[in-house]
Every structure is written in structure tokens, then in C-alpha cells.
Length: 191
Image 1 (cartoon, rainbow, N blue to C red):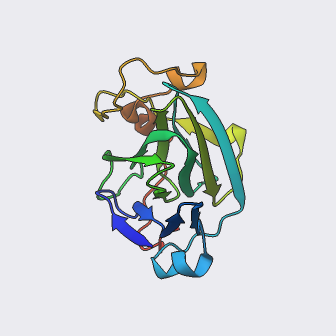
Image 2: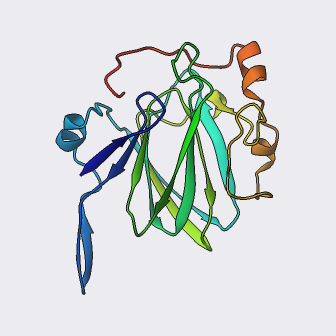
């Protein structure tokens, strides 16, 4: 497995080894020991699977008190996956990074707890799967505005399909002013 650092502290892009031939392929999508060896010491408690159609943008989501780390990947189709560092006090606060995840490159993005995450669907449909380090608490969910001008995210699409909730998310400045952002805790060991 190849682990690549990103411009954001603790966010990693992972390329599992894929063994393929004329019959198809095999890849190991997760192994506690292998990921710990790569500096990801997260304990995952929940797996999720979503299906979306082309043009759908989901995000940018996070939980404030029940922080969720995520290991995300695509089993069918392609997305542009985006992570924003919203941890107050982080050396990369307010920065974003993105990567193409699809069913050919088999890449995964590790999103540590306390960051905002989202994706936009570039293929006709996508099956998006992710492991979480904490359970989903609807009352704790927060959202960062997908097109916050202060962030300047290049989503590779101009008019995405958004939920009403995502359309009404707040800017990073408004979230900070309302004390609705997590704090950066260094040396958490990739949790």
C-alpha cells in the first residue's frame, strides 16, 4: 500500500495494492495493522455506503462534539473528494485538498476527526463507502458552505445538485464566530 501525504496536517491519500488479471481484481481495503504501520491509529465503529447520481455534491460535513474520522473510497464511479481543515489552531486551518477517487485507481482518503468533508459525483452514478471513528449523531452534524469564497475550492463543476441543508450551510468565518468549529489537538497519532 502506498501512503501519500497531503498539504493538510494528518490527511492521507492511500493507494492499496491491487492484484488484477483477465478475471478481475483483488484488493485489501482495510487492515488494522497495515494502517497503524502507516500512522493511522483510528478505531472504526461504523461503515456507511451512499449512492448518488452525476452532479450531486454532498458536504461539507462534520460533527462538532462527536468528531468523526473517516476512511473514504469509491466502489463504483468517480468523485472529486474534498477535505477542509476547520480545526481552530491547526497549522493548515482554512486550507483544503482534493483528490479523484474512483473504481479504477482504488484510492482512499483518510480524513482525521475534526475536518470537514465532501465530494462531488463526476460519473453517471457513484457508490461511495466510508468507515467512521464515531457514530452518526444527527443533532451534532454541522456543515460548511461548499462554495465559501474564502476557501476557493475548485469543485470541477459549476452548478451541483445540493440538498436544502447543504445549500444553507455557513461560511467558515460564520462558523468560527459562532464557536461551531473543533479545536486542533496535535499529536493525536492519526486519529
